[in-house]
Image 1: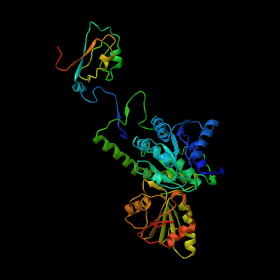
Image 2: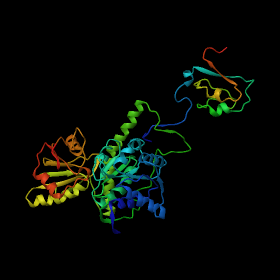
Image 3: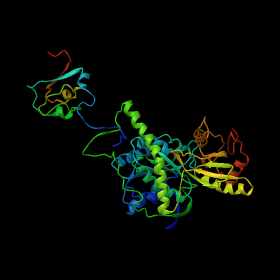
Image 4: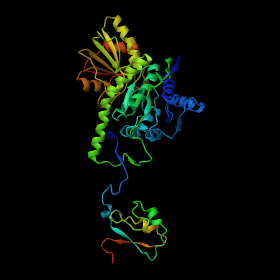
Length: 83
Length: 368
């Protein structure tokens, strides 16, 4: 079919490994997490899976998950400063 | 059936006959009667369409874009300031390759506030990727609107078409109208790139310059291919319904030594001027230019040219005259006449020919 119009289809990583944009990294405290799923629901990049594991190859570090977490179980830690 | 109609009602009747599914429009003088009539058809059930009243012309075209991308036949109509207000979406509709048909009832731009005929409104949209045809009779407004859908929806084109008719001197005058039963003249719309909920995607999203150039060039490829599609469509229309149209409407041009070139209703007025000039022994002919995009290949020979422009590009000149100069390399006598509904009689037009000074421009009625 002749290409008439710029149409993008949803695929993983269409913009490359956007995790490299990150300044702050989300770190989950498993003791506090009660698996409510708010973080995954709000994540604009859909990088939090059903086990609440965060895909750091694509996570841009926006911090929305940490902001939304009702248990304050996610800390935003500057890249390279994690203990 | 032979009936009588205004130009506006003829357009509305053609939109109904074409089986249009969605109409989104905002009323503006002198276009109002078109959308009022379509709203009447929908309300009374003689037209099975969604009529979307919107808060502005920008929204009207945006709604048409949203409807058209689902693969349904879509129409809107506007005039003058309405067309300028929707201009962002007018550009989008063409580049999104949507076969929307729009009637523009040509009207001057303010200030000073003026509702009468002039072509500067639609000619400001000539670089948008829309095909543009200018009509001069009620019958032609009807026929051109029907053909516009078939041309726009052809896979070789997939571009919107604007049908232009002069405000009041055509939109509100009454002439005879022979309507048609359209049958299968306009095939069902098949839009290859329509939205498919099973395969979601982003339409017209951020695009690299490499892809942008490639996709933009496809608009021009289709614009060039539309030449053949228009030819085929007008030939098929003539075969089925007995009325012939072409790139220009020629009157006594065969042996003419001087040609009047014009657009819209002034081109019909010019035919009377030709008869007057012929009775004086002047071998004159009239060539009314119908299509502006794609711009036709005009066979002008070595005849002298008098070009009447009911429009103006400030700092440049009449747009039709400029286009003819650019495309044919021929010089002309350019008369700027009929702006803001200025009365131009056939006697005036005959005098343009008698007093022609090739290579110059003149504003009818004023000295500049």
